[in-house]
View 1 (cartoon, rainbow, N blue to C red):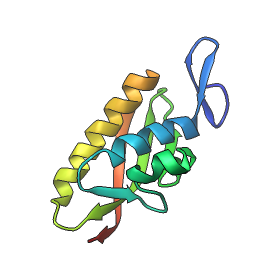
View 2 (tube, one colour; view 1 turned 120 degrees about the vertical axis):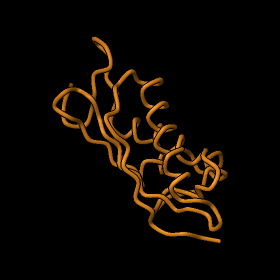
View 3 (cartoon, rainbow, N blue to C red; view 1 turned 180 degrees about the vertical axis):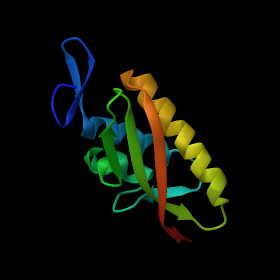
View 4 (cartoon, rainbow, N blue to C red; view 1 turned 30 degrees about the vertical axis):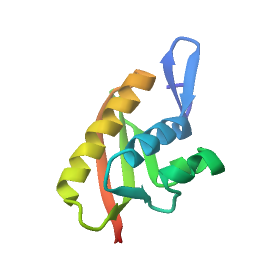
Length: 117
């Protein structure tokens, strides 16, 4: 790890935790039933507002073994099965982070902030 807020993904290349959080946020909002990240914008507004706010509902932390863990706070749409949505988000976020950065993900924790119509 390069410093407190960056991860070295290969020699001479590092990535900030905010970039990892944006990747996680984008992946999470692509799952049907996820309205948005808590304190965040919806996926449909990203082209108009930019992706900088996508890290607001995501916390990334490192583990001693070099892997990371992600914690996401979600707003879920009413009528969707919450355990199923959470499982899909966990898989999608883990795959997105690992495929885009090469950093292993030990776990993805989900907190449901609220349910909306």
